[in-house]
Image (cartoon, rainbow, N blue to C red; front, side, top):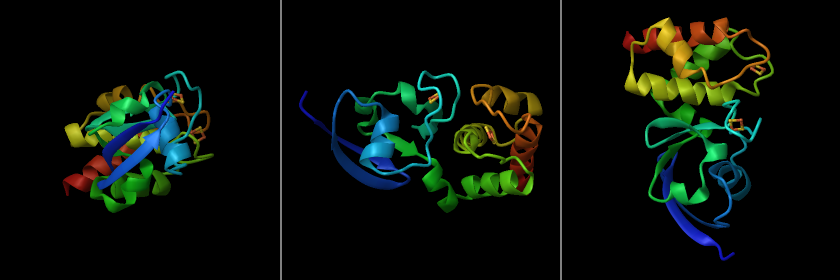
Length: 157
Ligand code: FES
Ligand code: FES
């Protein structure tokens, strides 16, 4: 199949790529753009490791076709250091021991980012709901929920 040309904003910069229309957004990010921070766990929408923010909403990039990137605004973990919300979330994860093996971490941070964009003052229940699609084998979830709660409080100061 012929390649398609896609233009989008990624981590606040414009990009144009030519790619196979059968690819998923996850493949475009990792294979075409070399952004390896977005992880592939299950590949079927169940683990959240591949979560990115697409037009302000958290999505599992293993379930998004490349064509859906056209004209979109996309944020990945690589863009979080240049963003106040992203930076605070990352710092709270590190300081709070919410990162162990780290495989799930980019996905959790992107889910947390989308939550705090929409709801800067979430309850613990809302944090759990917003991250319910993200699986972690290591932390038991409590430090992750604590880190997101602390990030919201820090950003509100
Ligand atoms: S790799 Fe996409 S949800 Fe698991
Ligand atoms: S820190 Fe290892 S899977 Fe979450």
